Length: 250
Image 1: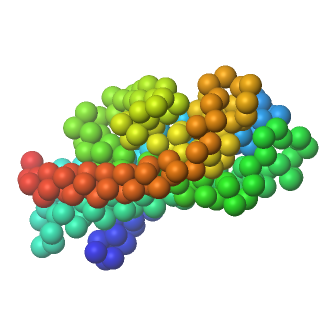
Image 2 (image 1 turned 90 degrees about the vertical axis):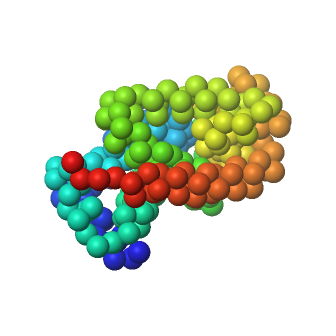
């Protein structure tokens, strides 16, 4: 498996995908600084997991799933290896990619308030920020095999649009509801309420702000969201790996 992972990771070494991993979070931080300087840290985190990251994740997944498409998968399918392992390796590379991008967001959000001439409202501590980034990766990683599969079926733009729409409608909107746990897309926004103290709408999770309720700060939601996300990741990865195993060169 390690050899498969290293092989799949090497395939993206000189691709746009590699640049996208660090370019997207840097641009996100710059946008936050120039548009809402007083909320720089809060908006860097919030805009990342609610608006920008779903599209970046989908684009990364589509590009990753199409690495071998130039040869119509012949190079992979002809190898004497288990195709399920190849797919799982691709998924793990995808998880590595999104983890790298999220860590850049964490670093920029945390050091930005110290090196930039700003007075950030709703500051996030280093421990909360690091915990939040780890949880963001965990709650999003099940979407990696999902959108790799959909990307190979529908193409780049439909997959990106679908990711942004479902993560917004079934994520941000559902996150503040009583039955938020029904929609896995809502987990990042919902779990960031107690961790980062940020509401899905980008406002600090404080009394008086729109959509705020004391229940949103309940830490008991974190284990539930994490456990379900991990189970979903394993299930979706297994099902899509079974699909990939049945592929034939065309």
